[in-house]
Length: 195
Image (cartoon, rainbow, N blue to C red; front, side, top):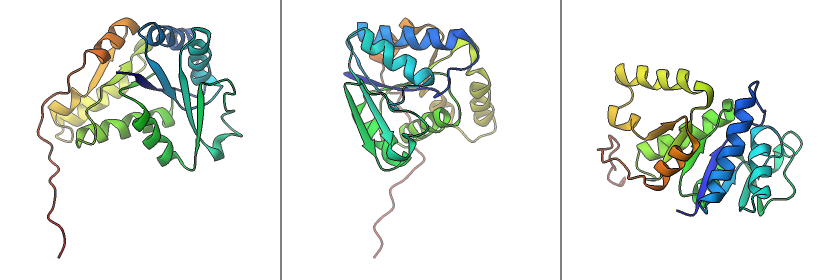
């Protein structure tokens, strides 16, 4: 494992714990010799994460769509910043550059990134670990929704194990490093080519 992609809010959130968690995660990843891939912004939790990785001497790679430069001011001191043409390209490149994924608190963008990468794991497009840093129980309502969807028959119970959930940064990163993809049968089948 060389790099972890971190999904995080472009706002700092209302609790100081969110910023503290972004700093703690950045320090832990650098201490473990892991590079960081993220959304490329200099604001919100993304900015806290990037600044801390740089302060600790770590590698931080940003991936930012050109159209977001006005809203999410691009971080100018990164190890590398990749400009892409769309949000779809952003997520694909972030995935290609990363060996695992961790979500910090965030909004719709963070949820989108988290659910897309989890869907890709569900259908077997990758077998990389996906972690939730459940800061101040931020993700509890989301986890309740996932459990509800599983009870209602929309998410297989084996697929709910795709998410590693921890409140402790060190335990989450250790779990990511030692992760073994769960064995499950995908419901997706490959169709024969059309004639």
